[in-house]
Length: 282
Length: 289
Image (cartoon, rainbow over all chains, first blue to last red; front, top):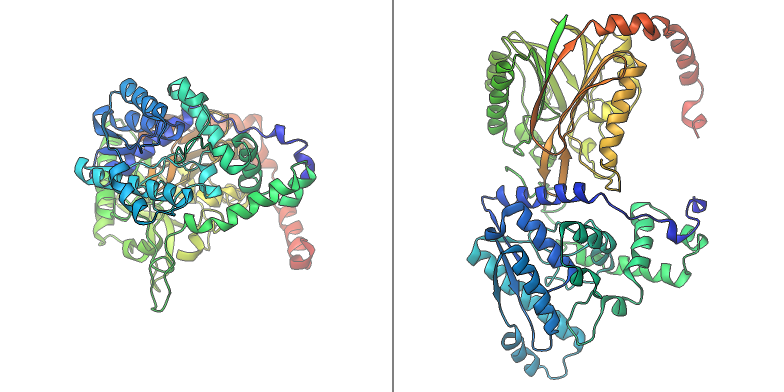
């Protein structure tokens, strides 16, 4: 099997963007309207994933039915705010800006030795609180912005940015998100800049992860979608440390992809033998 | 002989038989208005697809007195219908089923014989396996019905062919998967290929009705097709949208294709039987490795 992957460069992650657009906008429309709603709430960071999610939501529901929420912290890059505004202006969606600084600072003051990592998680969860509150106020579902790369790598805050009602980009690798973003007209400046969670000054995703999205997307595609073994991929030329660190990272972060574990004691238990889709009855 | 064949690629409400029934009746009315003789609905069209624990609660025991079937049978007086449902047998086994209804009668019920239980599929957990592949007579000639995974295996269409089916009706609730640079999903491309192949190999009509819509994150891609006995595409529904695709079929194409290409005449069934007996008699369990 390994012979099939002569070089990592042979992996083609190109998607048909017309088809992706049709499926994803249909998904957003279906999953929101079937619960009796017609609106969406999206946290717009100024980055690629949330910009694309916003474009798709507008295509599915119309700009008047989409609320973009900007939630800067005092150290957030001003550029993030500007880029989010570009999307808001281009799409004509409703928008509000909620500064999270006065909400999270008291917690940081209470624990002065809080690490950057913890601060990042608190900010992500504060944003979740605001989005879910706006969801109720606006009468719309929270549309998530996570992509397949970050879901698999667990590069996300549990119950923070990972929390949403539906996740249209969750089966597209970051490379594919970029391709689709270009096709639907996301501003080029957003597509071109280095992806960043913008939780810490100067942070970039690729700096945090230690590899580029282009590299890790190919590896994940071969491991997950094509079911290659790690040994096959080392033989095909991927660095052994790279392969093993990614494999381990996917395993270690699986808890972020699961609901809390329920201890089974009865004869019929949610999640084990009480099985219904969320779309039950609709 | 002409047959106006309608393929209804519909969305369904998951677990709401009554709502789905009303939709069937509306489409029957529309198909009738367009002059259709036969209207085919997708797999599990009365219930939705990922039923899981809803299975026993949506199951029907088809008869003239059963309220859902009574209304469908009324609608079948002047329009033959193929509908998808969960069939509960007398001993409460649940089957993925398709019924052929005509002139107020239940002409045939097919139970799905291959239940995919791998990947995203979990049918074997909730359903019993059908035990028969049978063609049956209709006012348009001899017909056979298969449901989705049934026709991913080569043997059920082959059996229907030998049992006399000149029109194969395939129904699906096929979840879309395999997005690439191609204009179609892998799953759509595969299903169309094999439908066309069966029509060509068996010189028979192959009609496929596939549903649309979403259930949780699964999308159903539609793209219902009709191929003629020479493998020619006569009709294709749109992808991912509800549609009623009505096509006038000239059944005499069977005569013309088979006059030129006598694959059915030349099929050596006794050779198949002899070799099959030999293959199955050998220690099949260990030999196949």
